[in-house]
Image (cartoon, rainbow, N blue to C red; front, side, top):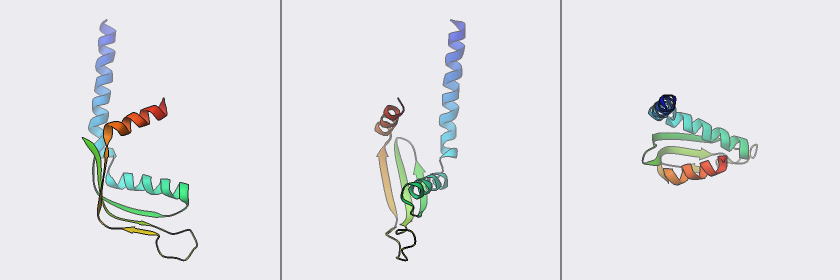
Length: 104
């Protein structure tokens, strides 16, 4: 029983440290870099994304300063999409449930 209690305390401690570290790891630059890399991998297009602010709780919110999506590579045409200041918001718990279903 004592070992179970110690294990539970350790797990809760690890989760608490992970949650506390999340805002320092998930910065706007980090997220923009990952999103741009995913877009490049899947479409071959360049995405320039500047995230002004990022919030994780209670909902996932991002304030994008600007975003530009290039046209088809080597087309010589201007950017396909240019976006000015915009805010995005996604409910966090349904997103986490959907991710959990994908994992399991």
